Length: 202
Image 1 (cartoon, one colour):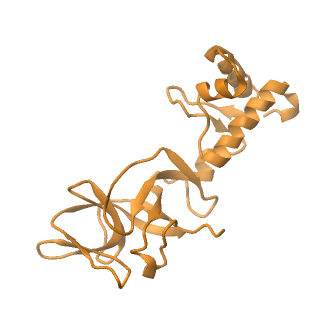
Image 2 (cartoon, rainbow, N blue to C red):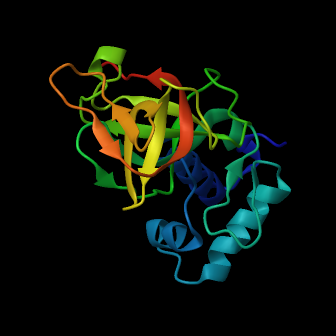
């Protein structure tokens, strides 16, 4: 891998732009975004800069993926987990996936493809120390032990974060907030089990 000193000024600017977006947004720019940022009208002009950065060992690119640029010195798989969306910890909300990533450093094995992150919305799990705005780290699995905190999806495609209690003819999704009542559903699917909580302190 060559140093930044070996780059032209434009290549250095493009590299710093890519690095800034990966660090702050979680994924790299598209060819279009690079072109707009540097007023390069031709996509081929952008690709030439990217190929130069590849040749000099600073970035890698995956074919057929629009945001597949990664920094060789800072592999994304070691820095971040997929941020799959927001999960309700209050009333039920429709599950919506997002294409973002959250930097978790070495707190979790981010090479494990079964781990993902969700941002918590609501305070129904506050007595389990999971607050509004926290991130829960979830292991993707279809089963859970009674009482585990899970990401559950109902037949109406509504997702929520609750403790899992299967009962005789229904499933009880139990909040950890004494001011709230449990949610009872006939059917629900487990998307994963919570294995960690991350809180950003201002």
